[in-house]
Image (cartoon, rainbow, N blue to C red):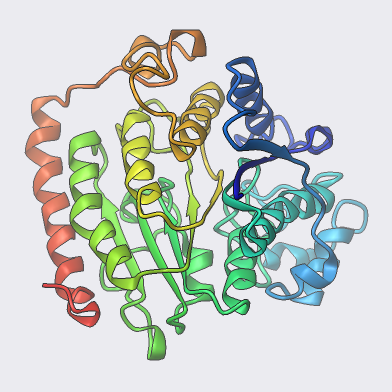
Length: 376
């Protein structure tokens, strides 16, 4: 019988980005701690699964040998050319253990893909994953090894049709680029507009090339986007496209930097919005590999991922958790108050500015890619 696998090992906590870097590697452990305290990691088919480091051979399936060598040597043998690979920048600092950390975070996602392929798990979650900005030979956006690409490749190489869904506030540019000319991996990214946020890409006219035309989908959201507007865009575009594509497996990057109060972004979601989206995807009945991603308010990210795991496991009803308590509205991240955020009411400016921009994006996606998939 397939299980729900939470993939984590405490040894990954020995590594961390420099204190000056907004990326905090303790989030996965904090999420795991919340779930363990609530008894949500065992029973009803749930289990914890240890991670392993990805091997060099596995990472070479996407990344170049030259890049992996630079990543390994940079902390002790830094060379100027490494700067051209994105190493030693403000968002991708060089630090001791960065290769080892990246390999472990990547290996956890590969473990999840293996569990899905073997049928041992129908839901797998690696909260330490989600490094969607890394390219074949370049680090970017706190990302060194693209575990999401490698997990999608593992599934696709096993002849699975893969849907990659990215709900991080930042465009999943590295994953999109990896599969831009392929139709066996559909990439869908709903994110804050590149006109306002890194990496400056992910517009509705980026739809793929050659065999991949129509299999890259982008939904840029304006600053200030609130739950109802975000979910309307998700419901009108993402769900019909997933239904039409009919994947064998779904990989979801669930960055929590979409939440109001995140220091690096400008959306205004509560964690109820990604939870509602995850519930819809879960109800498709497809195997799901979820990976973490962004989230720079550490406590809110950890609580959001705890809620995400609960939803993926089907424990998201009102009897299982206190809906509407705690969270960003109360400026509290204490899980004892409930995993869900209190509803945020958009102000008049948001209502006036966000809804029309979201509608324009939805209509552009429908015009650009719906016909390719037989949708009206």
